[in-house]
Image 1: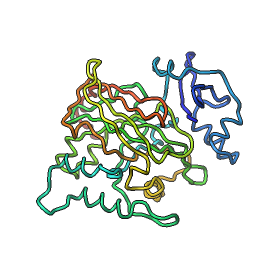
Image 2: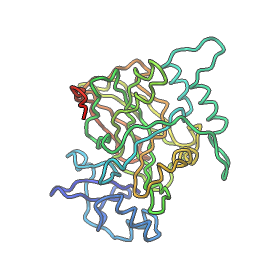
Image 3: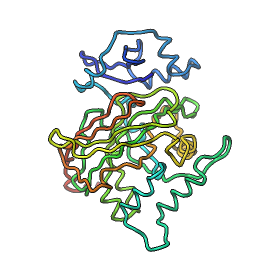
Amino acid sequence: MFLSQLLLPDGGRAVALRDGDAAHLVPGVDSTRALALAAIAAGRGLADEAAHRGQGAAVDLAAALAEGRVLPPVDHPDPAHLHLTGTGLTHLGSAATRDAMHGAPDAGELTDSMKMFRMGLEGGKPRPGEVGVQPEWFYKGNGHAVAAPGAALASPDFALDAGEEPEIAGLYLIGPDGTPFRLGFALGNEFSDHVTERGNYLWLAHSKLRPASFGPEMLLGDLPQHVEGTSRILRDGAVLWERPFLSGEANMSHSIANLEHHHFKYPLFRQPGDMHVHFFGTATLSFADGIRCRPGDVFQVEAPALGLPLQNPLAAGADLPARIEVL
């Protein structure tokens, strides 16, 4: 089953539940966050809470998506309380992609990326009750950096590159007592600046401060062990680049539980009421194949296990502020 958020033709908000090909509105709520808070209060799962409310009107999600009325599957009324974060070097093959970006090391010398990747291979999937090795972690921004499905991903004028990263994201709500609740999983485009990152890996933090998109739907329940998807770039209506990508724990060097532990171990990320969107990484980048994207290109990420495809055009962002004022 899948949940999504959308705008109704009259401008109101709604939550939709899709099971198979049929989708209907969930009565009594206008956000997945409100639905999740109600589920926590009632001691029910998210799918059970939606079922408890019965079925509202039928909805055509494909039409809503084409009309630009589909919102990200989770959001927060105060965007500053939605956190965008992620982990890297988590997928089999991701270290090879990273090494290709940063150039070959001297003979016999391992890059820092390869060292961290090997740490994940050796200790990223601990046994139940144990804590595994911590992954590479980064901050992308807050809810102000989220682009809705179909909306443009704006690359700032100082960026050196604008490239897609097809990923799966975990979506979370922090409960009233500070407990993180995983709501589900969504397709994501963890949009980044790979030229800046390649210049010096210590610039990774800068390269990740870009917008991101996720959705259009949120998968309820567990993530399949093996997820197959396709990432492509369209230019002038034709396919410029296309590659399959793999995700799910069968294709990862870390378990989802280990990645979650090392994010939510920080009290900063367990503030009641906050939302979190945490990207789990990828091993597939057009940049590694020498593709340089430009405004007008369209990113498409699809994986049937995660619901409807995610599509976003690339746009040029605003200029830098003229000056900094001193008070």
